[in-house]
Amino acid sequence: MMCLNSPCTRPDLNSLLRTADTGLNHHRVRWDRPVIQCVSRFDSSNANSSSASIHTGFSFGAGLVGRSRFEWQSFCSILASKVISLEQDTEKRNGGGDGVAAVDCHPALDLVSVKNQPVSQALLHRPLSIADLSPAPMHGSQLRVAYQGVPGAYSEAAAGKAYPNCEAIPCDQFDVAFQAVELWIADRAVLPVENSLGGSIHRNYDLLLRHRLHIVGEVQLPVHHCLLALPGVRKEYLTRVISHPQALSQCEHTLTKMSLNVVREAVSDTAGSAEYIASNNLRDTAAIASSRAAELYGLNILADGIQDDSCNVTRFVMLAREPIIPRTDRPFKTSIVFAHEKGTSVLFKVLSAFAFRNISLTKIESRPHRNCPIRLVDDAEAGTAKHFEYMFYIDFEASLAESRAQNALAELQEYVSFLRVLGSYPMDMTPWTPSSPQD
Ligand SMILES: O=C(O)C(=O)C[C@]1(C(=O)O)C=C[C@@H](O)C=C1
Image (cartoon, rainbow, N blue to C red; front, side):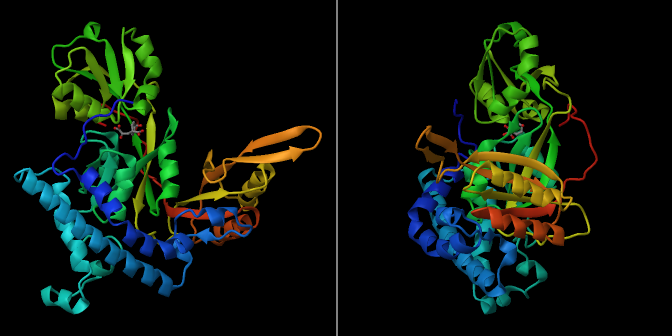
């Protein structure tokens, strides 16, 4: 896949994140221990043990939660100061520089340090309010929401739908968006997990397991694709169409029907492909992206609504450091991931735990079990069977506050070797609006 420029170039938030992360590994290790055991990180020893534990932020004693949060905050304040000093160094080297979205998040980093001051010192400035105690560090400032891509990406639109008036922070990779939240550079991440035409975005399923964030919501966004090119460029001049692989696959048949004499090339995001064409003055290349990307990067719309189905929708999940408290006063969904050792018959039992309680499953996804990808079963006469092992992801329509959901998970624990609740969160119940050129 062709890699476009990093969206956060000055200072490079993405590389700062990576440096901060690597540079302070010893802090991470110290803090990780209780979390691996208790909260969210997938632990291979747990996955293979005979008794499973539900890994969720909801189910611990207050003392444990409090202690790990305290450790998390001091850990983050060290990381934040490291990031700030790295950024200052970078700025000095670059002779200052004007702001990009990533620079806008500096005050929030200061906020992390403020949060970690002794209470008495904080009170010198102003009395504590309820906002100081909330898991999301709003403090009157905008919520900072990390997304993969550059302005004009559908993920940015999803961030705006999920959190109107948020400060959207572009990241060059999905992994960076996860890390931005873990390091308190952002308060939330908004990530695509599935599309009605292209299917699951597997990378994000894998990252959900690898990171310790919680799903706190979902949004479904109608995705309306346009074919964009520089002003004056006609379809006949094109030799290449570039876009995000999901966007290319969502427009596959329409592109074929248009009989363009082009190669299709995958790049890291839709709006990034538009930006790339504009900044390199490419007159033989078109991008598949939103009409907002056309506006932002000065491109013309050669064709409008080129997705293969007018009901093209992408589902995004919102991620936070803390889980939300599940409720029963509105429709909730719960997402889990589990592993088992005994083959596919266990999967039937797991599914029946939901069926018997009348709980609808809205999604099931399997991914390779990284710690134990293949199970060998020797048969003296027939040879060796090689079974692929999986992690199963399930979304079901119930809140974790409901006893039927709790009972289903309790039953599940009997069949699985690893179980983690990724989040219990309100379902997107916004009215259905089919995709339109404005999206
Ligand atoms: O490239 C973008 O604009 C994105 O936001 C990414 C993404 C995806 O990963 O699926 C999001 C929504 C669309 O389905 C196409 C691409």
